[in-house]
Amino acid sequence: MHEGEFAIPSRLEEMAKAEQIVLGTLERLGYDETAAFALRLALQEALSNAIVHGNESRPERFVSVSYRADAARIVIEIEDEGIGFDPAAVPDPTREENLRIPSGRGIALMRAFMTGVEFTPPCNRVRMVYERAKRTKQA
Amino acid sequence: MTSTASRLRVSERNGVTCIGFIDRNILDEANIQRIGDELSRVVEGLVQPKMLISFSNVDHLSSAALGTLITINNKIRAKDGQLRLAEIDSQIQEVFAITKLDRVFQIHDSVDQALASFS
Image: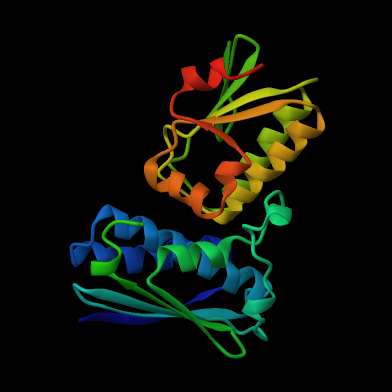
């Protein structure tokens, strides 16, 4: 089992550091390119949401990241210091009337590329699970 | 004629402005902002833009990059222009399919196919 936890300040340029740590773990465990693509995308979206929306890009606020990974699955939890949000209130970006709106696709992509995505009320914490056997090839 | 802007390769073929990306990963928001600004300047300099964006060099993109593409597409449509996307990696194609943006953008396998599709 590989596991770790760390925190980054709420600056977008700090995201690369978090990605390096988590993706480096995946590489050591032999996860393939499909997994790396999915995890990089989901991490990018979750961290960006936490920094920009959760912590309102205030650098004195931190985003906490923890992960546990083995050869079969990886679980990543990301928590910001914001007040949370209502995931059900996020408009479906795939509805015809929303297709030409530039924002609002991050959570949909996280759900599509991860095996599971759960928000813990008040939803300033997200838990993402990637199960290798179920996601070796995207549907 | 070929010129290199900071994050884009810009050239012209048969009246079509062809764009390529220098970066393999279009994830970082600051970088995406720069790409968006550069694309906007290109569109603003054209009367009725015909633009082709190639993703041949791109391995990753994020929802912020999709947002920039939508903004550019909206600006091109406002000028009665046309936008085509080409040479998109299969995993990135999936991102377009999941978000149903493959219904918003005209996506072609090759640059030649995309060029032939302009009216």
